[in-house]
Image (tube, rainbow, N blue to C red; front, side, top):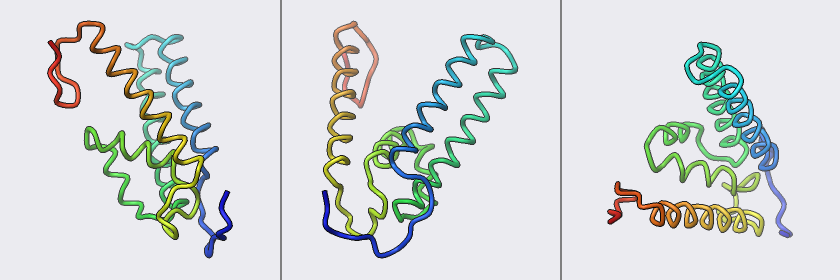
Length: 138
């Protein structure tokens, strides 16, 4: 709950609609692989369309938080893509004016941190023998 007002109008997509659109892209991709199978050409077309739609959605979100759209290329660097995704989900509209997250943004970051911690714990418990985050297991 902030008393600050945004000085400029930021086009693009807000935090809630960004999240819902991402969920829909994942759902469409999962349904395509279940219905058509991972080897079908229809699934290849659906996954390519979902990748393009995801990139467009990320650019719209970057515009909404007020930062350069060129940051979309961070998506293709292995661990920076995860950081970009978390940042896009947690930053509020007009984030570039205050450079501070609101209460909901911090809650979203905490939820992501908890999910990452659970995933690393489950990998460790399952006997995963590779490396995750540069941490050797076993």
